[in-house]
Image 1 (cartoon, rainbow, N blue to C red):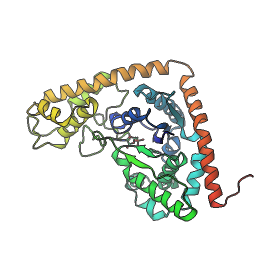
Image 2 (cartoon, helix red, strand yellow):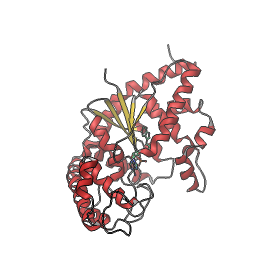
Image 3 (cartoon, rainbow, N blue to C red):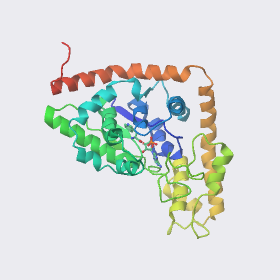
Length: 329
Ligand code: AMP
Ligand code: TRP
């Protein structure tokens, strides 16, 4: 039997090239190798307020983008987290074995909590729900960007604690990071991770950005006071541009060095822009075709949820039995 893989993206903000290079590109590469489940994690998105109408359309947009980058609904289950109620059900059971101290230590929680006037309980519970997403399907691997590594460690801690309290129940999921592109930085501030929630005009390249806008953002990216690429002394901005190029092209480090060493920043930016655009253009075309087909995205999500529901039900039943919760005979 194939091993299972689960990963998810929140349908908030606009998916950007960091999401693509850190997560989605990897998903496409492994979808045939594993029994694959890709979630649009809308229950995670509402841990901070989302405009309801916008959230509804973002769920569909995200599902269409999954397919536009190459996830194939015939090979993979593409589903919305809230349409499989066992995610929330298992999250409660896991909450009951999770010390609050573990959650308060999460760096993403601390950063998000600082940005809110009142901190919703959902923000603290966020990583428990993520653990539930993964453990519900007994996923063996979870492909994510670098920023999710701490949440994956916590997932293993929760699984271990559950297993030691109630007996072997959960598979330990491994973190699967891309070799290049696990952490794409902001184009305007190369010391900060490219993020959906940062609104600066030159910060992120959204997968659906108009092509000329994407080009402008790269041409204006922050570099440093040197004139040309020097691999012995790479500033953060130049290193980020090179990483983006390498992750899109799949070039080896030697090839990168041979081609770019000594190149003037203006020329480097032009080549990075061309590489990014060559990848965005076909993706945007597929996206428009997918969205133009009435009811298609909904039907994919419906089928995805139906496909994964039996696994989800069987895990929740097992967990209930282990914990002594009532299950019908
Ligand atoms: P999110 O945008 O938080 O829903 O993240 C979805 C996926 O994209 C996760 O696997 C993240 O680790 C990954 N990701 C988000 N931002 C970046 C980034 N700047 N560089 C690489 N991966 C990222
Ligand atoms: N927390 C992840 C993020 O923001 C999204 C996510 C939710 C996820 N559930 C998951 C990723 C399960 C991997 C597996 O990027």
